[in-house]
Structures are given as C-alpha cells and as structure tokens.
Image (cartoon, rainbow, N blue to C red; front, side):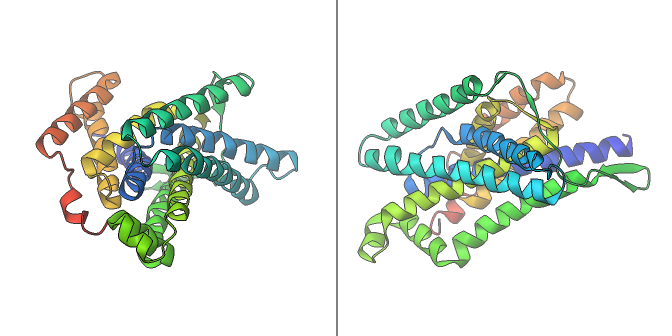
Length: 306
C-alpha cells in the first residue's frame, strides 16, 4: 500500500472517529443525566455549522474574513446559537415531559429536529444545496518524507481531542460536573442535597449542544462544505456509536465513534465491496455488537460513576 494513501486513510479514520465520538458523547450525556434520547441532536449539529458559517461571513464583511478572528467568530456564533436552542429544548420541551412517557420526549425531539432541518432548507437562500465552508485555519502542506499532510487537518483533529478532554474535565473536575454526576447517579438524592435539577438539565443540554456545534464546524472545515441535512446521518451514527460504547459513558461514546470510523475505513480499503457500501457494512457490524453486548462495551465499567 502506498504510504501517502495509508496516511490519508489513517487521517480519515482519526478525523471521522473524532467527529462521531463528539456526537456520540452528546447522546451519552443526555441519556446519562436526563435519561432521554435527544433525536434533535444531529440537527443542532447542522444548525451550529450554519451559525458558524454566518459568524465567519460576518467577520468577512468587517474585513476579518481570514485567520484567527474569523475562526473565533465561527466558534462563538456557532456555540452560542446551538447552546441557546439546546437550552430552550431542555427547558420548554424536555423538562415539562420528564415525568411522562419516554416516547413523548423521543417524539418531540424527533419533530424538533425535523423542524430545524426544514427551517435551514427553507429559510436559507439555496438551502437545499451544499454551502462552501471557509477555511480559517493554516492550510499549508506539511511534508514528512514522501507524505504530505495538511496542517489544517492536524489542527482540526487537535480541536476535536481538546473538546473531548474539556468535556471530561468539566464532568470530573468541577462543581458543575459534580452536580451533573450526582443527578445522573440519583435524582432524588441530588435534590435532597440542594442541587437544582432544572439548572443541571439545562446546562447539560447546553454542553451537549456545544459538542454538536463543534462536530458540525469540524466537519465543515474538513470537507469544506456543509448541507442542511448533514445532521441526519451523523445523528444516527452518533446514537449507534453511543449505544455500542455504552449509553451514559463518555469514554464508551468515544470508543463507539472510533469503532464505527474503523469499520468504514476497513470496508473502503480492505473488503472487496464498493465504497458506497461502507455504511451498510459498518451498521451491520454494529448491530452484531449490540446483539452480543446489549449494555455496551464500557457500560458496566462506568455505570456506577456516570
């Protein structure tokens, strides 16, 4: 195998794995804390990406379209819009239905995601068509022997790793994280200890929505384009990865995301099937993993803590 091709496949594996892991981490966070499946999560990813695009366009209109300022504007606007929508969903859609049937929460988040997706398609001019995503990172080629790697790809990968590490730090090393883990462990006991359950739920949705926006922006930077329905498949992949890794486990979600990415790469490179069937193969193997270990790969290990 050509070394440059091998490096490119490795980079694809790491990049897609990081994106899937971040999306899956959001699903695990919602389920571990609030005990709900938030099916609008993927569409908030797309919303965050489009909001990030709007932020970079606003910076460009002020003559700051390239470099660090545009990147900061992209992240700030993308995170802000996604977190506001996430907080509204948590406060006005999920919390009022928390005592009812779980199917109600599932349906209302599914419908909310559909509404967000269709709003992006209708409200944005030419919304049904892919939109070019600006490259605000250094994009020069780094040569390592005969292999060339774009610096932007390494930066995107580092941003994804930083997002996962920061999330883990918040959950395990801060008072907010302690409150979140207390609610995840036992809601009633957490309330007796004076923890504001409503505030914890809203903050959880804000963190999960920021993770979704981060994944959307990473995807846009890597592929240089975004489309209104990009969150549909990513949401399914993220949820599948979270289930395989173990719903409620952050590191289980990370593991599940990289497992799905590895299966796609194996199907593309090693199997005698067309690359268009890579998702079919990956989902097929994931179904088998769920059948073999229904509680997830890391569920039992982390069940007491998360």
